[in-house]
Every structure is written in C-alpha cells, then in structure tokens.
Length: 333
Ligand code: MF3
Ligand code: CO
Ligand code: CO
Image 1: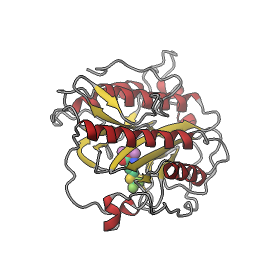
Image 2: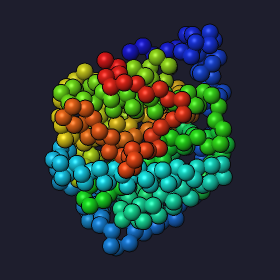
Image 3: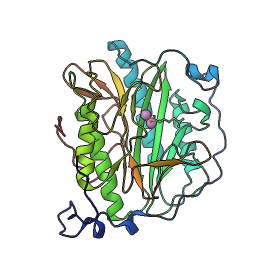
Image 4: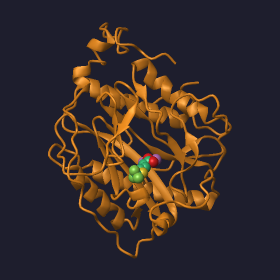
C-alpha cells in the first residue's frame, strides 16, 4: 500500500502539500520526553490471585499456543476485559495537564485492586508497574514516572488485568488539554485503524487481513505502522500465539476460528515507524522523535463475527476518539 509522501497533496483535501498540512513536522514534534523518577513500587493484597509467571520471577514458562475458548472460557474473558476497560476509563478520566504519569498509574493500581484484579504487567519480565504510560514520541512500554503531563501532549495508557485466571488487555491514547490538529489527526487515524483491524477479524478469514485493514487506514494518510510489535493471542496466557501483524503479511495465512482470543493494538507514527529503546530496557521511542499513538482491544472471534471483550457492561470503553470514522466490517478488503 502506497504511503503518502511529504510533497503529495494532503489527504484532508486542503489542497496543501502533506508537509505543509497534516504532515507539518513542527506540529508533530514536541519537546523531547525525558526520563523521570519511576513511580514508587506498589503491592497488591495477598488475597488477589497472581498470574502463574510471578512464581518464576516474571518469566512465563509452559505452552503459549493460541488461545481458543468455549462458552465458559469466553465468559471469564469478558469479565477480565470488563475490568481492564474500567481501569482504563478510571485512569483516563484523570488525564490533564500537571498530572504525573506516576499518579495515573496509582489511579489504575487502585482500580484493579478495588475490582479484585491483579495488574498483569506488575512483575512481568521485570516490569514493575501496573500500567505502561507512553507520552508523545514514546510509542509503548513507557514506565510511569514523575513527568507531569503538559498541555498538547498525547498519552497512551495500557492496562492488562488478570482476573480468575484470565487476562484482558486494552489501551487508549488521550489528549492532554488542547492538542494541535496534526496530532489530533494521527490519533483519530489510529483509533480508526484499530477498529478497522478488529472489523476484519472475521471467522474463516486470515490474520493477514487484520494488518491489511490497519494499513488501509494509515498509509493513505502518510502514517507509519510499527512492525516491531504486534497484537498477540491472550487468555490464560498474557502473550500467546498467534502474532497479530498490523501490516499486510501475506504469509500470515492462519485462519481465524470462533473462540479465538487475541489483541489488536496498532501503533501509528507521524514519521518513521522504527523504534529505539531507552537504556531502562523498556521505553520505546520513535527513531525520529515524532509522535506515535496506539489503541488496543482484546477481542474474540465468534461464529459470525468478532466480539470486543474490553468494554464495560454497557459496551463503553476509552477506545474511542471524537472525530474517528468507524468503518464497516470488512474494511480494507
Ligand atoms: N500491555 C502490553 C501489551 O499490549 C504489554 C506490556 S508488557 C510490559 O501487550 F512488560 F511492558 F508491561
Ligand atoms: Co496492552
Ligand atoms: Co497487548
């Protein structure tokens, strides 16, 4: 799929070149995010059950094959998804200029505990917090820290809840105060791409179609799609097979079958899609310092479609954006 170039006419029909309109680098580059003091370590009451990898130093052992569930398993996945969605809404509601990402993590931490859930990331492979919080050019795996959010930032909060043996994983990007139109357009496209990818996850289709649908939203607007990370099977295992590519991957011919649960979580970038890691071993930033956005849902393939699991009882979630256009099922075909 062709990616729009700087001198091409902007996709928004302004008549301007992309670089003078939605590709304006000055509007997409914020003061660099600097490393802060990591959030204080918090514990979870012993009464809340831990995921199995906590017994092996945070390193998962045992099979991590694709996750496919019967009715009872899917009911448990809905519960975990509901809890994760609520944690994300609770933390997202506190996003505003001046709040530190450590404070947002505290709000998330309290919300998991209140709901009887364990934060899956806490102690996972050495990650020490209940959420990943990623600001501006931090694409993912940001460590909650002492940095106060600034007006014009975008911030992704990524939440994974472990409840009764099952994980639910969801994330959303939030605007801090007033963001510029170029940033708004990137986040809107990312939300649309996520929902288009989910809509393409129909039984009998291949995993390849998910990435194809994501790219069909991102590329014509000139955005990068991160390939270093993808979605993943999820269920009783946090990160399981299959790998969900967010770009077209014709070799990904495995068929989606009813009962399969996995995440769709594309990261779109305003510029280059390559990431580099900080020496904290976690934080992943875009190589050119331009902003990146991400949304994530945990979904289940059904007999005749796809069900989003990371929503509250009334079907709401933070995976939404004011001017995002929700495309019909089959987008990108
Ligand atoms: N929640 C992230 C995902 O979407 C995983 C975070 S793993 C951590 O898969 F170790 F960085 F927390
Ligand atoms: Co996640
Ligand atoms: Co995930």
